[in-house]
Amino acid sequence: MHRETQAKLAHIESRPEEPYPPLQVVERAYPPTQAFWPHYWRDTGISVVASLIFAILFIWLYDYLTRMDETPHPSQPAMPSFQFYSVQGSLPTGNRDEQNPALLTQQEPTPLALDSPFPRELTAHEIHILLDSSDLKTKRWIGLLLSGFSVEEAVSLRVADVDLSLNRIYIEGTSPRSVPLTLRLKQAFLASTPDDSPEIPIDAEEISARIACASFDSGLPHPEEIDAATIRHTYIAYLVRQGIKLSELERIVGRFPAKNLALYGRLSPPGPSLSTNRVTLEHPALLNHEDVT
Image (cartoon, rainbow, N blue to C red):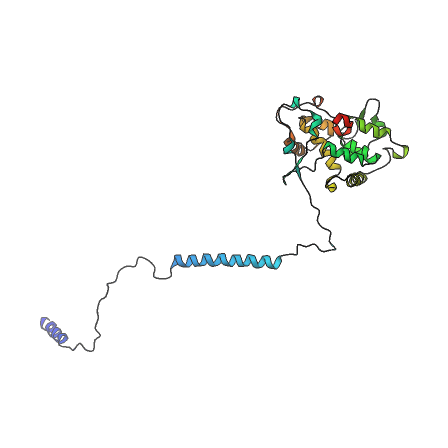
């Protein structure tokens, strides 16, 4: 076996090497530490950038294809614009007992705050102008709204509910109460004629229409914002600014939703609240001009 092995070795060593290709070891093999292909981080960045560009182009194309003409068609009425007012700039400060209620409504409400839930608030001077531009019926309805009446209660008012001798108006219905009869409102009732009796059937639409006509005739700015709700809000804000207890507000203006009472709490000045007998219930616009000034 040894001789055979020597013979094979001699045979191998004697063989010519020309037929075999030459080999050279450049680098020995080793376990890889990272993938040769694909390059994950590079491909991820390319994918993210491409997705953002595609999203921007898609949004631009969608906006371009779905964009509508903002100019209203001549046959279509223009949408009304609404202006909201905030009363934060006219809130009184200091002790409530030292405040003059007649001066509260003379402070101009400052325009602001789109999140304000309140309609426009009128000053005493603006209400005087509105009353001077109103007929007898409209003056009476405006006076009732400025005395704590709702539109429904003003519609259902009867002659027997007005006591001219005691200067009181009695309200029946779901919120029975009595409110003071101010001088200007009393004059409107005294000037009534048989054809102008409060018991003649009317509705809320007629009240709103007459107030709207008076607001346009008065020349006040933005007359389209003046309606029955505006006048009623003006009176409620006048009471709240004096510091009246919100829990007693219903004794003057009737039943009121609790969420609305919470909103009107924004108008209440700092300090303890006052009972109804410690605030002035008569709105200055329904008194004599001399009393207001």
